[in-house]
Length: 474
Image 1: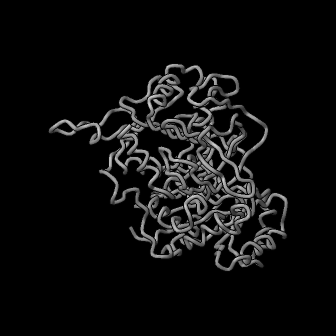
Image 2: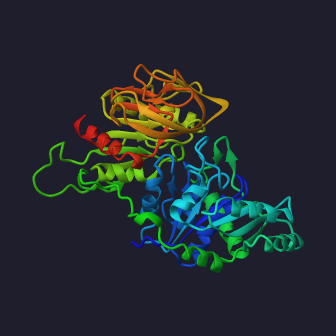
Image 3: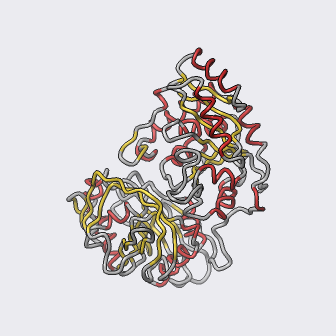
């Protein structure tokens, strides 16, 4: 694949300006023109990529220079953009907002520079007229390495308001590539951790994405936006696409969600030769995952099977390992608790010593109880909702050996929750969190690794290989 895939970064001066509406609508509008669109999101967000996937028909992928390192942003971008005509990257927070105390690291501007991609600035113009020129000029001139190629004005009240804004922006020298009026029909519902995921409101989400596409098509110059994307040139640094495979990996095995793979003909395979089944929790309660995780598991030789803890009363046939990512178990606590057969199956699998990797929502599900409702009881800990938001990047080191990492392995993670687990760590913690207030957190028991930290396994591919190898031998 050519490393010169056309691309745009959709950014804004601050959160709440309309980035998701514009980015998702633009993806859908380009797709409606017959373009194969590659969707991306800056940062650790799991929810926006679900809307991006609806808009494009392709997996939404994250680009996080903190979790994965700046050196992987280009390769991961090219991996996601294979075979695509154009890529749209939705930014995070304000254009120049990065990891706290780390300068530009992991900001939208940082990713735009790493990709050498033009930026389209989405500006909420609802409470300004001539001042918009000063705002845009400031953002466009702050860092000369960031190319602001145009502006999309959002929440414009009237034709007269638009006229005033355009007149002001002529002085800033940044072209207006779109003007969007207020449109309540494109709003998406939110709750304690952001937008409601697509998996919980699929039909309504489809309608919302269609409305976003119509609004962007009507209000934006799609031809000019595509031309800007095509002027991006090559991704710098001679990047090659990232691949989940490695010379040390066994043969690749596809994923499945229902039927088992047809066994090969010839002599029966031994347990060590057979692809171990790794069950991955999905459905409405467990929507937070990175596509690269299942790709890495499959490349390491696993047969990856998705299941829904809200509906399935058994683990997939032949399960040798279990991965439970993030999501909203607190919203579905009563349904998860009511599925007693599956809770018992998860507990039995963990008791057998099989590898179990749980992050955030997965940690809560493995606890004894959540908000007073019985969960799997794998961990002797209780979980409950609180009013306090815990949010931020974390620099972590593995305290001891586990099914995911050898002692001393350093990984970066992200915390995002309004729950608390008591106690916060077991006799063998999962991670030591570095920083001004060092602490330990999480649980390592038998084959279980459970923690609040969301990690991106592409930064340490050995995690998936180690997990699958433990599945083979446990």
